Image 1 (cartoon, rainbow, N blue to C red):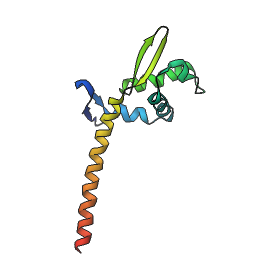
Image 2: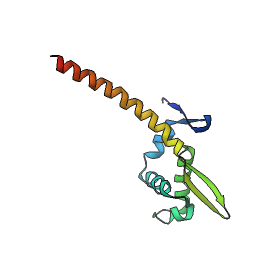
Image 3: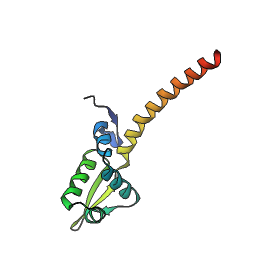
Image 4: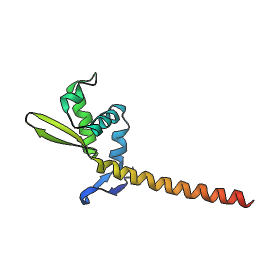
Length: 115
């Protein structure tokens, strides 16, 4: 397996395999979307799904390991926030592909126009 490592916020690195792997699940994408709007407790997140608290906690752990969310403690609750730097690294990776393919399409367009 090839691992792509891109620079992340604060000098760390993020493995894109973890980022894209975590986003391959629709529940995790939905959780990320919810916490992108506002910080939520684990209990509040779990209440939106027909899953056990433990199952939601596992999804959160995957997102956290990928660097897409962060957890903080407020009293007895764990509060989940989005960690946008994880998405920024994926965005850089995708922009590289976009740039590469745009250049190829431009060359093809130029070639076809010259005929």
